Image (cartoon, rainbow, N blue to C red; front, side):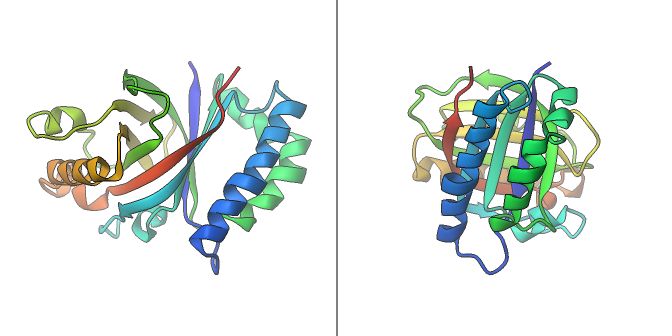
Length: 221
């Protein structure tokens, strides 16, 4: 089963969004691409960054700190299996080149990284669509079918992927929608928020939302 490692976090303390985005994409992203070229056996099979544009942070104190503080990014890396995720983070290249650079754009004290199983329910209408809405639901929240809950509304979106955690961790489910523009993204966010905010047991207050622009830095091989 293919594993999708997802990293959720904020920019480094004292850093502007512009500085964060530049370092993340043009500096760190370049190092990841060097890793893929140098060690394709251990490096990610695919690699995408999602830079936050707008969102809602979790209002429940029980939510993970990363969700309560608000997200600036979601990074996605694909691997063949769980063992490959572990092996990739134990190589000399990762520990000498990638790990030391992470503090240059990430608040390491509050970042969350987890492996997920990805189920593509609807492929995006076009490869040119690069706007997304992430609905990040923590462990302990009921795993409601969000698509089913918004089906009776006028919510519109181009593509959808449901990501389910495969190991215990602070995040249980990530709903990932592709959208055509920021107006559609904002409307969809509100529909999702209303659908989940039906009571404490559904975890509406502990859910975080992020509208982001996707950069597919390595589409795979």
